[in-house]
Image (cartoon, rainbow over all chains, first blue to last red; front, side, top):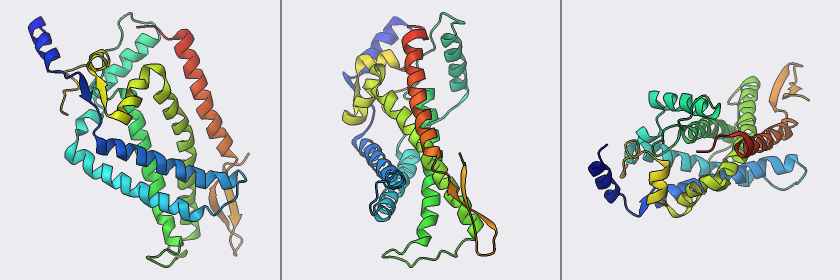
Length: 221
Length: 49
């Protein structure tokens, strides 16, 4: 890239680069609140803190399902699926990250696009785990009396219900580990720019240039 | 430590009830262990840019 092109590109970067629109930040924090509520209502009674957990649990579950549906519709239609796609370039990044961390090379890995490979992977893992929890939780709602339907515990066989409960519980347990890791990375000093961007929506021009490749994250995507 | 919770139905057949909640501590410890190991790796071993 020539110095003229570089200088021109730098001038087009605003002092504050929008990373997350308000609606997407609201989605993230609503999802976080519902997941924490679901885990608390699920596990606190198991740990001995007894309270009427079932109603707040399924209500939070419905809110989570609504949030997931919002994201699944909005992301492909109004955002860039390409920014979350894992392709050959990400595999090359993984190899260069491994070589760099094993000190097999003195060349640091190249800068990522909007999301690093690690961020894409955690997103996809959250997607699989939360969808598993949501689908199995939705199936379990058939066993509940709600304002909209009467329960039918015989809809599936006992053995099938067992599989549903195992998948739901396994998803919940995996979420415990993932949330610990997710909060840790959000609070790491070098990652605080991402935490701030999930609250205020932006990163600085300097952070954009230091952490991202402008050819891989074109502004406006 | 069990992995699954199992009971028997009225016919005496084994039926899966769900995951064993003994595993809650295991998954929590796995998260804490990951955090500790990563933090130590970044502090002591990771190459500096």
